[in-house]
Length: 116
Image (cartoon, rainbow, N blue to C red; front, side, top):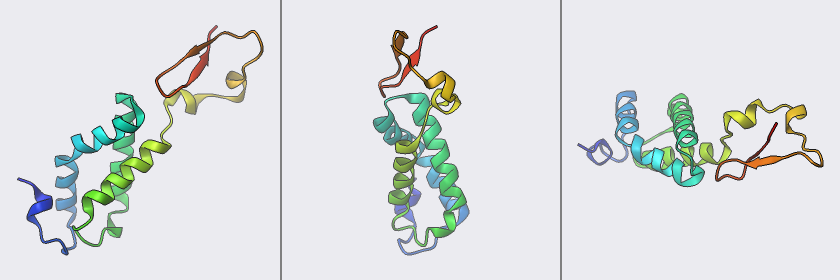
């Protein structure tokens, strides 16, 4: 059963309705984040953060009409801005590359790391 198609387009969504849409559309939202990040773990993190952000700002959703667009937009914004735990944990001392240092290419997103 597709709750998005089932409810009147101008109706203000209830918390239960939004929760159910998030559950039903999780795989679609995860796929969207993965298309941006090319990394499943990062995509899962971005999707989770986006759903948390959407839940906190659910009062801004005035109708069911644009609910999926609204959720997708939040996922895209989160995916574009997501950082890996490695890049968040980096300190200035560990991120400085000096001449002669060996570096290793990371994920498909182009990150590099110093090799000891």
